[in-house]
Length: 314
Image 1 (cartoon, rainbow, N blue to C red):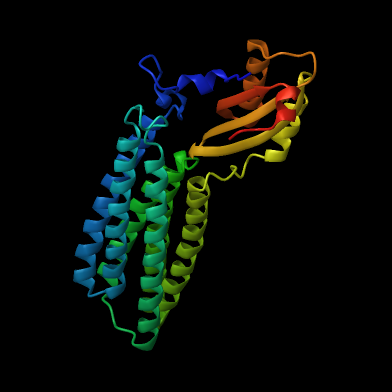
Image 2 (image 1 turned 45 degrees about the horizontal axis):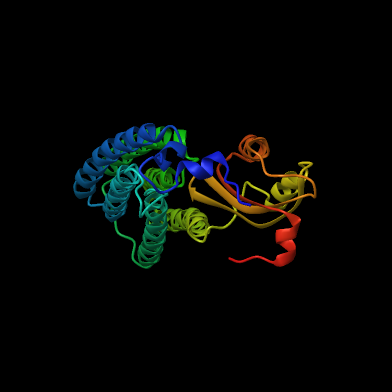
């Protein structure tokens, strides 16, 4: 005796199956627009910092320009991931291409770690051998870069619930912190002549980047391992399912994320004696999971207690 929740049937194989993309977050086009805005702004910041870096003979500003270039590539990657993930599901890829977003976030997290290591290394070298810079063009370019990065942060912060968008946001956050550090270091050097402050600020920026990267990597790996989403208590889900009067037991319960904000669940429910599977029961299960836990894609196998006694074949 097997029953599927309606969301579970939506993505069945067959010519009449509906596209799994219908189950995805509703504002994916907005995400793509926001990333495009961030790409344009970041490109302008890159040009300003390259010109300013050469004019000021500032290794710090040129290094930050390299950081911005890497982040521009990461933003392009994020946009590409959204384009690919919007491709329709098919018979071989019944969940569609949503996991491309998570792979992009994973790559971005790894890239952030590499960037942070390079920043820390350069900071150490600059502490050993500080170099003089021309302050005025340094400050002008750094302030222009800071304004652009703040604009990109504002754009991307409106959609940080999506992991791919969060990866892009963290890249721009790293750029913003770098710009703040360059401005602060330039002001200190102008006021005191102390060159090593640039290296100290760079090291702090590197540590902040690593902290954000580790979080992004952990969340990406959790989704790829199909771990229960952190915002969902699996034990509470089981207890709420058991609260329905027809249900005797729930087992083989799996909760995972297809992509950020798109959760799925499958499980076996054992009915109490005298009860049978019905569309009403499946509808109540589906509504409970959707309304209380924001799980939209559900698949249930409904079993009698007699089937439970025989055993399970998986």
